[in-house]
Length: 350
Image (cartoon, rainbow, N blue to C red; front, top):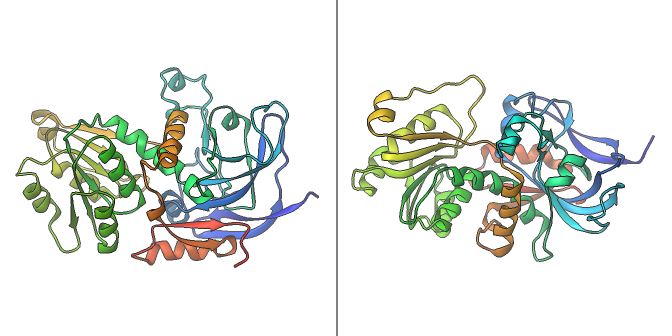
């Protein structure tokens, strides 16, 4: 039996247990990292509450996928990584050989290597991810800040699909971390008029502080009416849905203007459907897009955006908790109006 570590193991829906398991053994091309911080994610909450796609995650497994830490062991064949290096790694590594990788759609790789295990004292990075999706973390960034590279990479991938132009009006549905990251990326594209729609005034206040020109509180205002008033009746050039429920997917289509683009970013529960007006797509030439995950280049660019200060992630990190309180973290995030992301510190005893 090898050395043990604390880890949060997901056994199924709402069944997450902190256990003592063996520290992973490093093989050729792999690295072992001591986790400095792992941040909570809306996807983690969805998986915890309702399950997820089997090809991405299969319980029982160590949970979590946004993280950064310090390299403690390097397998043979990895000369560019040294012990003591501060790194973060993506939660995926494309095969670079399949049909989709051949089309440079690495995020849709048909033989993807996925990595879960951030809610633990140590995490082993598989060789395919070591090859293409590890980045060194600048010393000026905290581990928690660097961990947010993963969600930002996914948002960056989605925003790039929208072909946003300077001066466009962008509407974002969702005032959570993903919506607030999309807000900042849209601003970097030259959009002065970014409208954020949400339900929680405390979060909408953060959106305004991060550059939103206007916010719409959907709990007390009629979203479609307010957005149309704010766009002189034309609708938005681009609408980003960052919630992940069918009703807001459909609402996004009611907020976009002629010739505009709707990005359905938030993942809905499996098996759900939406209704789409054929007249809207045909006569108004609406571009309806989906977005999933990110490419290795998106991860590198996302870390650079955080390190340069172009995208602010500190406002999204609203709490820290030790690993033993991981279930508390999920419960807080499903009930609190104020918390956005919680940094899980595996080495913390407090």
